[in-house]
Amino acid sequence: MASSTAHPLPRPMRADARRNYERLLTEARRTFAEHGTDASLEDIARHAGVGIGTLYRHFPNRQALMNAVFQEAVTSLIERSRELAEAEQPCGALVEWLGALITHAGEYRGLSQALMSASHDESSALSQCSVPMREAGGRLLVRAQRAGHVRPEVSIDDLLQLTNAIALAAEQSPSDPHLAERLLKLTLTGLRA
Image (tube, rainbow, N blue to C red):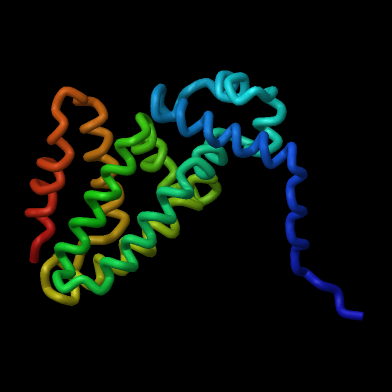
C-alpha cells in the first residue's frame, strides 16, 4: 500500500465558528480602516463579541488577520490586472494598475509599511498577498517593457516598493489628497525607456 504525502483537506468550520470568523473579519476591516493596521487585536476581538483566544484560533498572528482582511482587494486587483493585460496601451495598463494598488494601500493606515516589511519575508502571512500581486503586476510590466515603454532593468519588486512608498507618503500627508497621484506621475517619468 502506497503512503500518501498529500495533506488532508481542512475540515469545514462549524456554523458558530464561521460566524465568529466573519465577525472578526468585519470588525478588523472597520478597525484597520479607522485606526490603522497596528490597532489592538484585543479591541478587534472585543468589538466582534469574541475572546482574544478565538481571534488567535482563527488568525495566529496580526499578519494572518491582515492577509484575510485584504484577500478581497487582492483578488480584485489580480482580476483587474487580467483585464488590463489585453489593453491597447501596455504602459497605460501598468500605470492604471499601479494607481489602483496605491488606492488600495491607502485605504488602511499602516498597510503600506506592513507590505514593505513583508515583501522580503517569505514566512510572513502577508506574503500570501504579495506573491500573487508580484505575478499579476509582473505580467503587465513585461508587456510594457516588450512594447518599449518601460526600461528593461525595472522590476516588479521595484514598482511594488515604489507604490507602497507613495501610499505611505500620502498617508503621512492627509491634507493633500492629490499627493499620491502626483508622486506616481513623477515616478513614472523615470521608468520610461
